[in-house]
Length: 252
Image (cartoon, rainbow, N blue to C red):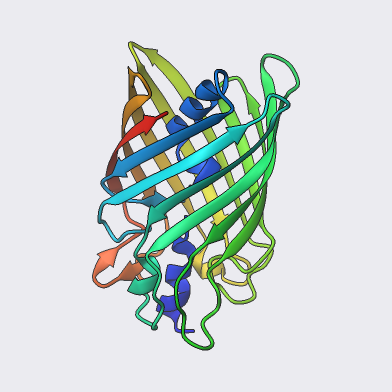
């Protein structure tokens, strides 16, 4: 595939379980009363691992989660996307669907862990020879109070990069309660694409969430990366440069 095609293929989903920290937190709280929860989000843009998935256009997202009292969980999450069609190589897919499941446990009140599997699915039509963007990842995370360290490892080609099985993403995050319904979220991650070192990069995010109660929250976040703009530019848009993203989420 052409260099531009390979560049865009990293722009696949956060998310499912790790995409929306505030949504995940609300879903866990809802699970205390019911094992089934849902969420819907309207965002000014869909950004995953620092890369725009909708080329600076709005995104409608939502999902369902099931959390068993034993710690096992499963869920599905979806969003509109444009990155595959933006490739301009004859691919046609405007939706991302994430399927995931795993187990969450606690060592004590301060330490917890999470292990699971995540499948990124991009239904659509693709020309002959187009490497499938569908991706399988295993992940493991450990948390101490408000701090979390997570490692994701691809079991397949990563978002359509040929011969990229074994790629990895490691990220650290922290969430702080600021009071009055406000919280601060910090994140830094590094995407390593096996056999494509030029396309590997580090991303950063600083976000503030306001919880209005009743499952309604608003998040504003600034996101940036150190990715090479020459590799991450499509149709005149720099999809990996700094940007502010506003989202409104309702959890049920």
